[in-house]
Amino acid sequence: MADPNVELLAQVAAALGELRAFVAGVFSRLLAEEGFRNALPGLILDDSPAVRLPVVADSAYGNSFEFREQLRQRQLDYVVAVEPKTVVWTADPNAAAVPRSAPTGRPRRYPPSNLLPEAQDLAAVARQVPASAWKKVTWRAGTRGPQRSRFAQVEIWAAHGWRAQEHPQRAAEWLLIEWPEGESGPSKYWLAQLGAGRTGLRRWVKTAHARWRIEMDCRELKEELGLDHFEGRHWLGWHHHVTLVTMAYAFLQSERARLKKNFWCDIADDEEATPAHSH
Image 1 (cartoon, rainbow, N blue to C red):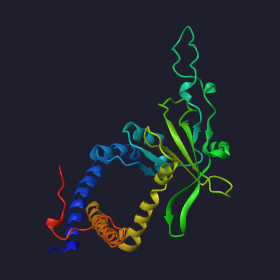
Image 2: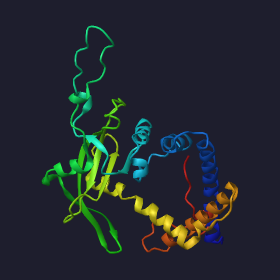
Image 3: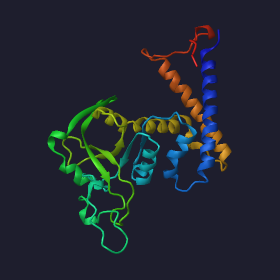
Image 4: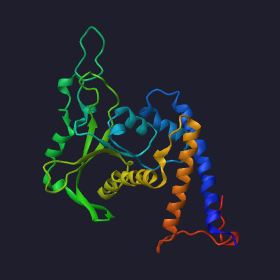
Protein backbone atom coordinates (compact mmCIF):
# COMPACT_ATOMS: atom_id res chain seq x y z
CA MET A 1 0.00 0.00 0.00
CA ALA A 2 1.36 3.37 -0.97
CA ASP A 3 2.28 5.79 1.78
CA PRO A 4 -0.42 8.51 1.73
CA ASN A 5 2.10 11.13 2.89
CA VAL A 6 4.34 10.37 -0.09
CA GLU A 7 1.35 10.58 -2.43
CA LEU A 8 0.32 13.90 -0.92
CA LEU A 9 3.83 15.30 -1.32
CA ALA A 10 3.85 14.22 -4.96
CA GLN A 11 0.50 15.93 -5.57
CA VAL A 12 1.65 19.10 -3.83
CA ALA A 13 4.91 19.07 -5.78
CA ALA A 14 3.05 18.77 -9.09
CA ALA A 15 0.69 21.59 -8.19
CA LEU A 16 3.52 23.83 -7.04
CA GLY A 17 5.41 23.09 -10.23
CA GLU A 18 2.52 24.53 -12.20
CA LEU A 19 2.28 27.45 -9.78
CA ARG A 20 6.02 28.11 -10.09
CA ALA A 21 5.75 28.33 -13.88
CA PHE A 22 2.77 30.65 -13.63
CA VAL A 23 4.47 32.96 -11.09
CA ALA A 24 7.65 33.07 -13.16
CA GLY A 25 5.64 34.09 -16.22
CA VAL A 26 3.75 36.76 -14.30
CA PHE A 27 6.86 38.34 -12.85
CA SER A 28 8.74 38.28 -16.16
CA ARG A 29 5.85 40.21 -17.72
CA LEU A 30 5.51 42.42 -14.68
CA LEU A 31 9.04 43.74 -15.10
CA ALA A 32 8.05 45.12 -18.50
CA GLU A 33 4.85 46.77 -17.25
CA GLU A 34 4.38 50.24 -15.84
CA GLY A 35 2.19 50.64 -12.80
CA PHE A 36 2.38 47.39 -10.84
CA ARG A 37 -0.98 47.76 -9.11
CA ASN A 38 -2.86 48.69 -12.27
CA ALA A 39 -1.25 45.91 -14.34
CA LEU A 40 -1.84 43.18 -11.76
CA PRO A 41 -5.51 42.35 -12.57
CA GLY A 42 -4.69 41.85 -16.24
CA LEU A 43 -1.62 39.76 -15.52
CA ILE A 44 -3.58 37.43 -13.25
CA LEU A 45 -6.62 37.08 -15.46
CA ASP A 46 -4.71 36.73 -18.74
CA ASP A 47 -2.69 33.80 -17.39
CA SER A 48 -5.43 32.17 -15.35
CA PRO A 49 -8.83 32.65 -17.00
CA ALA A 50 -10.52 30.29 -14.54
CA VAL A 51 -9.91 32.67 -11.62
CA ARG A 52 -13.26 34.10 -10.62
CA LEU A 53 -13.05 34.40 -6.84
CA PRO A 54 -13.50 37.91 -5.43
CA VAL A 55 -10.32 39.96 -5.22
CA VAL A 56 -9.50 41.16 -1.70
CA ALA A 57 -6.79 43.73 -1.06
CA ASP A 58 -5.62 46.28 1.47
CA SER A 59 -5.83 50.04 0.98
CA ALA A 60 -2.48 50.19 -0.84
CA TYR A 61 -4.39 48.71 -3.79
CA GLY A 62 -7.95 49.70 -2.91
CA ASN A 63 -7.16 53.43 -2.90
CA SER A 64 -6.22 53.21 -6.58
CA PHE A 65 -9.17 54.17 -8.79
CA GLU A 66 -7.35 52.68 -11.79
CA PHE A 67 -6.86 49.35 -10.01
CA ARG A 68 -10.56 48.99 -9.26
CA GLU A 69 -11.40 50.13 -12.80
CA GLN A 70 -9.20 47.35 -14.23
CA LEU A 71 -10.99 44.81 -12.05
CA ARG A 72 -14.37 45.98 -13.30
CA GLN A 73 -13.29 45.91 -16.93
CA ARG A 74 -12.22 42.29 -16.48
CA GLN A 75 -15.49 41.47 -14.68
CA LEU A 76 -13.71 40.52 -11.47
CA ASP A 77 -15.65 40.88 -8.24
CA TYR A 78 -13.76 42.64 -5.48
CA VAL A 79 -13.88 43.90 -1.91
CA VAL A 80 -10.90 46.19 -1.24
CA ALA A 81 -10.04 48.30 1.78
CA VAL A 82 -9.85 52.08 1.36
CA GLU A 83 -8.85 54.99 3.57
CA PRO A 84 -11.36 57.36 5.19
CA LYS A 85 -10.09 60.32 3.14
CA THR A 86 -11.36 58.72 -0.10
CA VAL A 87 -13.83 61.15 -1.72
CA VAL A 88 -17.11 59.88 -3.18
CA TRP A 89 -20.57 60.93 -4.30
CA THR A 90 -23.72 59.36 -2.86
CA ALA A 91 -25.74 60.43 -5.93
CA ASP A 92 -25.03 59.42 -9.52
CA PRO A 93 -22.79 62.09 -11.14
CA ASN A 94 -23.68 60.70 -14.57
CA ALA A 95 -27.22 62.01 -14.08
CA ALA A 96 -26.08 65.63 -13.81
CA ALA A 97 -27.43 67.72 -16.66
CA VAL A 98 -25.00 69.08 -19.25
CA PRO A 99 -25.75 72.78 -19.92
CA ARG A 100 -26.47 73.88 -23.44
CA SER A 101 -23.32 74.69 -25.39
CA ALA A 102 -22.49 78.22 -26.48
CA PRO A 103 -23.14 79.09 -30.15
CA THR A 104 -19.40 79.17 -30.78
CA GLY A 105 -16.58 77.04 -29.50
CA ARG A 106 -16.27 73.39 -28.63
CA PRO A 107 -19.53 71.65 -27.62
CA ARG A 108 -19.80 70.93 -23.91
CA ARG A 109 -19.62 67.21 -23.06
CA TYR A 110 -19.58 67.23 -19.26
CA PRO A 111 -21.42 69.22 -16.58
CA PRO A 112 -19.40 71.83 -14.67
CA SER A 113 -18.29 70.90 -11.16
CA ASN A 114 -20.88 73.19 -9.55
CA LEU A 115 -23.69 71.05 -11.02
CA LEU A 116 -22.27 67.77 -9.72
CA PRO A 117 -23.48 66.26 -6.42
CA GLU A 118 -21.57 67.21 -3.30
CA ALA A 119 -18.39 65.15 -2.92
CA GLN A 120 -17.67 63.88 0.59
CA ASP A 121 -15.03 61.76 2.30
CA LEU A 122 -16.02 58.38 3.67
CA ALA A 123 -16.05 59.49 7.29
CA ALA A 124 -18.65 62.14 6.45
CA VAL A 125 -20.74 59.61 4.52
CA ALA A 126 -20.65 57.17 7.45
CA ARG A 127 -22.02 59.77 9.85
CA GLN A 128 -25.00 60.39 7.56
CA VAL A 129 -26.09 56.74 7.50
CA PRO A 130 -29.40 56.39 9.39
CA ALA A 131 -29.44 54.30 12.55
CA SER A 132 -31.81 51.76 10.97
CA ALA A 133 -29.24 50.92 8.28
CA TRP A 134 -26.67 49.55 10.73
CA LYS A 135 -26.79 45.77 11.17
CA LYS A 136 -24.91 43.46 13.52
CA VAL A 137 -23.12 40.72 11.62
CA THR A 138 -21.13 37.71 12.84
CA TRP A 139 -18.72 36.55 10.13
CA ARG A 140 -16.74 33.77 11.80
CA ALA A 141 -15.89 32.05 15.07
CA GLY A 142 -12.58 33.24 16.49
CA THR A 143 -10.35 31.98 19.30
CA ARG A 144 -11.91 34.59 21.59
CA GLY A 145 -15.47 33.94 20.53
CA PRO A 146 -17.64 35.01 17.60
CA GLN A 147 -16.26 37.84 15.47
CA ARG A 148 -19.07 40.38 15.39
CA SER A 149 -19.52 44.06 14.63
CA ARG A 150 -21.90 46.64 13.10
CA PHE A 151 -21.96 47.23 9.35
CA ALA A 152 -23.79 49.35 6.81
CA GLN A 153 -23.81 49.54 3.00
CA VAL A 154 -24.10 52.69 0.90
CA GLU A 155 -24.11 52.93 -2.89
CA ILE A 156 -21.47 55.46 -3.99
CA TRP A 157 -19.57 56.75 -7.03
CA ALA A 158 -15.85 57.46 -6.65
CA ALA A 159 -15.05 61.17 -7.18
CA HIS A 160 -11.49 60.47 -8.32
CA GLY A 161 -9.99 63.48 -10.11
CA TRP A 162 -13.13 65.63 -9.95
CA ARG A 163 -11.26 68.72 -8.70
CA ALA A 164 -8.94 68.51 -11.70
CA GLN A 165 -11.91 68.22 -14.07
CA GLU A 166 -10.99 64.65 -14.97
CA HIS A 167 -13.78 62.57 -16.48
CA PRO A 168 -13.14 58.81 -16.15
CA GLN A 169 -16.09 56.48 -16.43
CA ARG A 170 -17.96 56.69 -13.12
CA ALA A 171 -19.33 53.30 -12.06
CA ALA A 172 -21.46 52.64 -9.00
CA GLU A 173 -19.73 50.78 -6.18
CA TRP A 174 -20.83 49.68 -2.74
CA LEU A 175 -19.24 51.25 0.30
CA LEU A 176 -19.09 48.81 3.23
CA ILE A 177 -18.55 50.50 6.60
CA GLU A 178 -17.65 48.85 9.90
CA TRP A 179 -18.50 50.89 12.98
CA PRO A 180 -18.15 48.83 16.17
CA GLU A 181 -20.81 49.54 18.77
CA GLY A 182 -19.61 51.93 21.44
CA GLU A 183 -16.79 53.37 19.31
CA SER A 184 -16.59 57.05 18.44
CA GLY A 185 -16.25 56.42 14.72
CA PRO A 186 -15.95 53.77 12.00
CA SER A 187 -12.95 51.45 12.10
CA LYS A 188 -12.81 50.18 8.50
CA TYR A 189 -14.06 50.99 5.01
CA TRP A 190 -14.21 48.88 1.85
CA LEU A 191 -15.29 49.54 -1.73
CA ALA A 192 -16.84 46.54 -3.43
CA GLN A 193 -18.64 44.99 -6.35
CA LEU A 194 -19.90 41.41 -6.01
CA GLY A 195 -21.85 40.81 -9.19
CA ALA A 196 -25.14 42.13 -10.48
CA GLY A 197 -27.39 39.92 -8.32
CA ARG A 198 -28.58 40.60 -4.81
CA THR A 199 -25.87 39.87 -2.24
CA GLY A 200 -26.53 39.51 1.47
CA LEU A 201 -24.69 41.74 3.91
CA ARG A 202 -23.09 38.75 5.64
CA ARG A 203 -21.41 37.69 2.40
CA TRP A 204 -20.00 41.20 1.93
CA VAL A 205 -18.64 41.15 5.46
CA LYS A 206 -17.15 37.65 5.22
CA THR A 207 -15.43 38.53 1.94
CA ALA A 208 -14.09 41.81 3.32
CA HIS A 209 -12.63 40.04 6.35
CA ALA A 210 -11.16 37.16 4.31
CA ARG A 211 -7.74 38.82 4.34
CA TRP A 212 -7.16 37.63 7.90
CA ARG A 213 -6.44 34.16 6.50
CA ILE A 214 -3.80 35.55 4.14
CA GLU A 215 -2.20 37.48 6.99
CA MET A 216 -2.20 34.36 9.18
CA ASP A 217 -0.57 32.32 6.41
CA CYS A 218 2.17 34.93 5.97
CA ARG A 219 2.82 35.04 9.70
CA GLU A 220 3.04 31.25 10.00
CA LEU A 221 5.24 31.02 6.90
CA LYS A 222 7.66 33.47 8.53
CA GLU A 223 7.53 32.28 12.14
CA GLU A 224 7.31 28.53 11.60
CA LEU A 225 9.03 27.88 8.27
CA GLY A 226 11.48 30.75 7.77
CA LEU A 227 9.98 32.45 4.73
CA ASP A 228 11.87 35.66 5.61
CA HIS A 229 15.21 33.93 6.33
CA PHE A 230 16.50 34.05 2.77
CA GLU A 231 19.63 36.22 2.50
CA GLY A 232 20.69 35.66 -1.10
CA ARG A 233 20.86 38.24 -3.86
CA HIS A 234 19.54 36.33 -6.86
CA TRP A 235 16.01 35.81 -8.12
CA LEU A 236 16.50 32.07 -8.74
CA GLY A 237 17.61 31.36 -5.17
CA TRP A 238 14.78 33.39 -3.71
CA HIS A 239 12.31 31.62 -6.00
CA HIS A 240 13.54 28.20 -4.89
CA HIS A 241 13.36 29.22 -1.23
CA VAL A 242 9.80 30.53 -1.50
CA THR A 243 8.67 27.47 -3.48
CA LEU A 244 10.07 24.99 -0.96
CA VAL A 245 8.71 26.90 2.03
CA THR A 246 5.28 27.12 0.39
CA MET A 247 5.37 23.42 -0.45
CA ALA A 248 6.18 22.55 3.16
CA TYR A 249 3.41 24.81 4.40
CA ALA A 250 0.88 23.28 2.00
CA PHE A 251 1.80 19.82 3.28
CA LEU A 252 1.45 20.86 6.93
CA GLN A 253 -1.89 22.53 6.28
CA SER A 254 -3.15 19.45 4.44
CA GLU A 255 -2.10 17.23 7.33
CA ARG A 256 -3.72 19.59 9.83
CA ALA A 257 -6.99 19.49 7.91
CA ARG A 258 -6.84 15.71 7.28
CA LEU A 259 -6.54 14.96 10.98
CA LYS A 260 -9.64 16.98 11.83
CA LYS A 261 -12.64 14.90 12.83
CA ASN A 262 -14.96 16.50 10.29
CA PHE A 263 -12.50 16.73 7.37
CA TRP A 264 -14.47 16.18 4.16
CA CYS A 265 -11.68 14.86 1.93
CA ASP A 266 -8.98 12.34 2.72
CA ILE A 267 -6.08 10.70 0.92
CA ALA A 268 -7.08 7.44 -0.82
CA ASP A 269 -5.36 4.27 0.40
CA ASP A 270 -4.57 3.15 -3.14
CA GLU A 271 -5.35 3.92 -6.76
CA GLU A 272 -8.43 1.67 -6.83
CA ALA A 273 -10.03 3.72 -4.05
CA THR A 274 -9.55 6.97 -5.93
CA PRO A 275 -12.79 8.08 -7.64
CA ALA A 276 -12.64 8.60 -11.39
CA HIS A 277 -13.00 12.13 -12.74
CA SER A 278 -14.94 12.85 -15.90
CA HIS A 279 -13.47 15.22 -18.44
